[in-house]
Length: 606
Image (cartoon, helix red, strand yellow):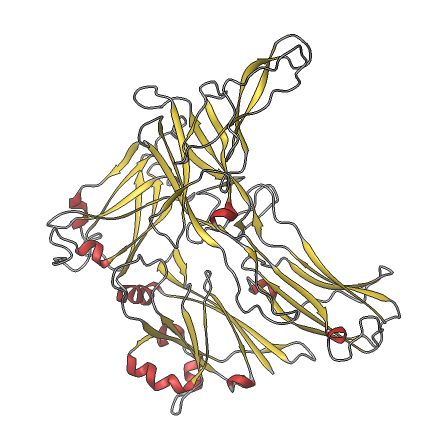
């Protein structure tokens, strides 16, 4: 019997601020002599959570059944059985941490630790006739324990909200800064932009508030933890400015590894004429994209939905006026950059053919012989493209009209990615699409490795959470406006979709021979964002179906699909030709157009 244990782990920073326990190792141990397994299995995890010492870990090493890594959502899966010496009994579940999620890089990495969660006695369930039993489990570690673990790694976090003082409604798009009111000098700990609900999170290290003018030779924090105070801006307007003395008050002084704050401001009117990056396709960068995962959190007009990512050519939308909205009315320009998590701090301008797909950013009026030999005012599209810049103004053709519609005016970003807003653009500037990012250049994909239908993928591929940055300012000057989205999950890998019939591929198999009693459908489906959008089914050539075959796998609990063999006894099926379908669709969108369904097909006769 195979035992498939599926789970998900998270931890609370605050009661309303959970985080996925991503990229950690989950270890399962069989009970050891002298343990009261029944008492441990019925105990609440809050009674059994414990950080283990090195000797504790060594003592239980010989009882290890198996271990695996959690994915970006804290999900994990074990496939247990005879090879592991496991027969369905209770096991203890531990978590080994080489680090903790979202910990900022530091020159010296802290030591690893392991903690015990609980003992579980799975209630295995197997479909009739199946040699495979399954059980799913999910647990979120209480903040008191999880914050202790984070503190061991010197990883501090602030989860907070900014709301309008009058209405209590969260305010999005506010740039929040956190400071430590150190006696020697204030330390800026970090900053973040509030999401659609007014929520923000700032991650920092113990070393960030231990700094002194003599660091790194001498670090000092007189009272053991940071004394927190905050400032905030909305566009170019300061909306919160706490004094350092606020950090000396009881609710802010000597903060621990996890801090929860609620701040309120007098929300200003939106800066309607300020340059601003607002959307990727149809999705608002703060309201519709989860700040922790970079995945979409809502559907729009019936497409995409919670848990989806981005791929292909992504329209980055917003607004940039023709002239500066502050100071002198200088002509304006803008640019986009991206930061790959493998190269923190390195911001790459989006410019040139590999990165920029042509997109219409605006229009202007020109005189043109459209339908006759007479000039008339008509619209000319303004396009931003990676190459192929055209003269401005557009040269008029020689000879009489009609010349039909005028060609587009093509603007190419300069080597640093800057695009100058055309002075004759309608709508006071460029509003809507500002550039189109060819995301496979920034986040390459391709075909994931395959091991044949029925076999798991040995090297599953995942996407990347890019940071996207928007800057705008006067032509020839420094950027005076900036906003960014910290995480946008981009995945350009093709899904693995393999289908075969065991009876045709084995020794003596003959695809032209009819089947009589056994049908074994081998299938492999794998993609980081395949979600529930895959289906295995069988129907006959006459249109009547012996029944839809549901894979023996709880697809709703798995992010990547599954690999396996589905058996059917077809002895009683009518003599006919049959089709076996495997349909898949990645949960990916470019912001406007979703990934389409694809399929594999095998046929057989009975």
